[in-house]
Image 1 (cartoon, rainbow, N blue to C red):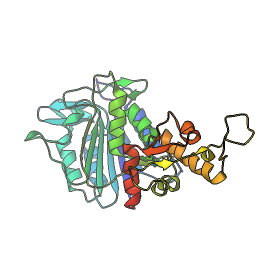
Image 2 (image 1 turned 180 degrees about the vertical axis):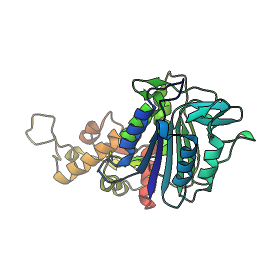
Image 3 (image 1 turned 135 degrees about the horizontal axis):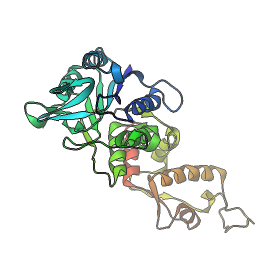
Image 4 (image 1 turned 90 degrees about the vertical axis):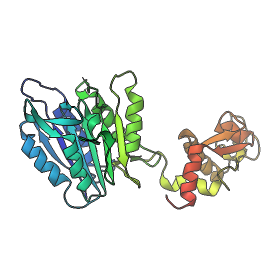
Length: 322
C-alpha cells in the first residue's frame, strides 16, 4: 500500500496565500499514477477550511496507522518559528496557538509501521522538521523516515507563477526531471534536482533521511530499457576493460555509400549493439576510447570505456541487483 495525505491552505484569516491549494492538486496529479497509468499513491486531500487543527491531527494519525510500503505527507501553507520547534499553521490558527508542532508530526511518523514515511513541507521554517523540540537541532528520525523541506529552519518559502518555488521544482522532479537511468524517482534524486535548480533563490531545501534500502516515489519512462542496460554486463569483461569497436558497428558504413566507408562494412548485429552503446553514451554510462565520439571510435577501430556511473551500474548488474 502507498498512501498520501496532501494538505494545502490558502484562506488564512488575515494572512492569505495564493498557491497552496493549486500545489496540492498538482502534487496529487503527478503522484497518483506512474508514467504507464498504473496506480501509484492513493491520496487524501485536505484544503482550506477542512484543514483545522483537529482534522489535520486526526488525518495524520490515520495516514501513519497500519502497515504498507510508503506513507507520504505533503503540506503547503504557512509555517511558524516557535524557538526550538516549528509549527505547521492550521486554518483555525490563533495567536499563541498556531497549529501543529513539527515534532508532533515526526513522533507519529517515527511510530508508524510503514516501511517508509515521507514528509514533504513547503512552508516557512520547514527546516525545523526532524528536530526535537527539547534538544533543538539534533535530528531524531525513526527507521524509514524521510524529510524533504522547502527551506531551512530560519528561512521563508517563496511563491511564484502559481506555485511555491519549491513545489514547482518538486513537480518537475517527480514528472521525470529527477528520474534515474531506469526511470525511478527517489527522495535523494528529488533533493538533488531541486537543490541544483534553485540557483539564485534565497531559500535552500533540506533533506534528512534514515533509510537502509531503495525507495521509489514514482516510476517514469526509463532512459534505457532494463534489458538493454543489462547488456553492458555482457559487453565488458570487467569494469575497467575496453569494448573494442570497428567500422562494422557504424550503420552508415555501407560499401559504395555516400558517407565515409571502409571494410569491414556495417553488420546488423553490430549495429544493434552500437545503438545500445550510443544510448549508454548519451546517458553518461560510457565514453569513447581515444576518440572524440562514438562514430569515430567505430570508424577508427578504437572502442569505449565505462564511466564511473557506468561502473556503478555494471557492478549492480553483475551482482544481480538489477
